[in-house]
Image (cartoon, rainbow, N blue to C red; front, side, top):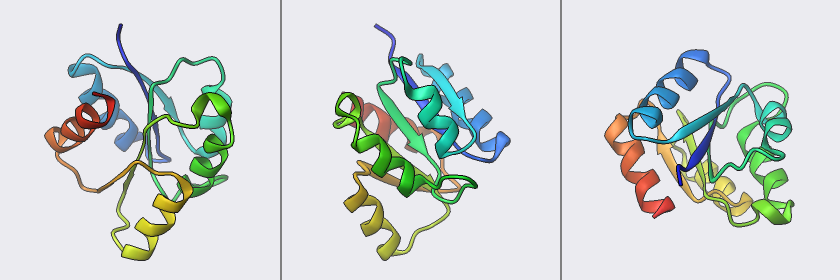
Length: 121
């Protein structure tokens, strides 16, 4: 079964690059432009993992993670933060919200795929 990964970023170019990388590796993708959009698209989407930015309008990545973790069906879904933020306090905030991992932009496609393979198994 093909794994479906949601990519959440307010930058169209970043979403496209992440989706392109994932599709080339055999994954299906769902794109969302911010946390609110992601929550709307999450219902019934069959998503196996979320890759989200931190700084976005409407709802940021930390708020998205907290919201996703309140839903029983997504309590254990892997969530990777993909962001320009690298401060330790931001990473701790992400971890306490329920982030599974953290990748700092700019990223290498191989780095993203290695983390995804490790987390999704």
